[in-house]
Image (cartoon, rainbow, N blue to C red):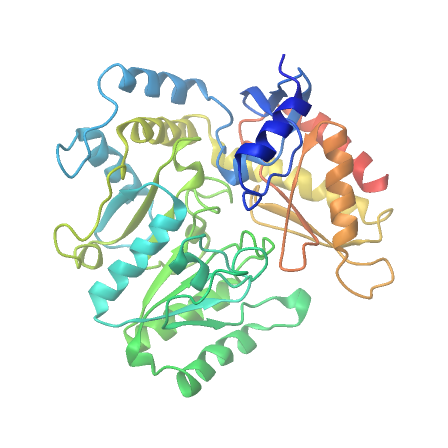
Length: 422
């Protein structure tokens, strides 16, 4: 076993403080929803590498698929020497993506890279430059990703100026008194005060905001955004980097709505822990960039594509959409029942297994980030890894593997209850 204290000292000397790290221990091995540190301690993982492990740590299908690919070749760069797996996985994603129109998919490496390329594609397709995003949204740590992100700390502090022609509107949030009408009015105000709609290439939103607090976009609002985009020739981009691949009880979160985006970005659980992202969308829009305009040295890694192929099969064969609904319902039922003894619980929400609990001060005076931090710390000390989020840092989100064993899930809920009442 490796001593954590020694590793922490080496980490402080070798790596920058800007790479913030939550845990003071180091992973040694993991399987499905369980993780063991370098000193042999066991944890139940309800963080999933920030939503990357919907199919768990080292799913058997994923492990086998990557091992088989590694015995063939690890890299050629798809733009130099292509391979069939890129096409096969693109076909599967095209078939699952919502919308009654022809679709195409391009692969990249990270979620931020997918977002960057979605904006490139939208600008190429429309000949316009402006982009509208929303307060509380998170779209990555690149310069364009930060420009689109509607949360300053810790993502944007000290890194400006950011790319121009990016504007932010209000995201609907009933808990904070922002109605659907307020949100649409804020977009109309942008059209009057900041940029005419004929210069807007795209409106980008998260069907369920991730870092912003797991707030779900209302169906009526998504329909209104679709109508507004159609009226002005604007492309609609759904950022599903965190919400996609079965997390919400649908393959894509956008399937919950009666309208389809023009482009969807995805990453995280797409490849079960291997770096892969994608943009899927209308074929004519995806074809707008000229040859060479899209790609990347590692974009569409054959190892990651092998993993993604196995992930898609696992979601279908193991009925993970239904399991997401069942586990999410059980968690929400547990949290709702805890309201009787935990007055800080202000809201329990989320589609499928994309669940969050928000805490306000017991006297109702505002968000309670300290309570969220206390719950997280108590859980971690007792072997349950949780993540916080939200503009006010007062939300705990749950990103457990959808493949988690029932007994482990029940154990985790007991640990959560203990953390809430501690």
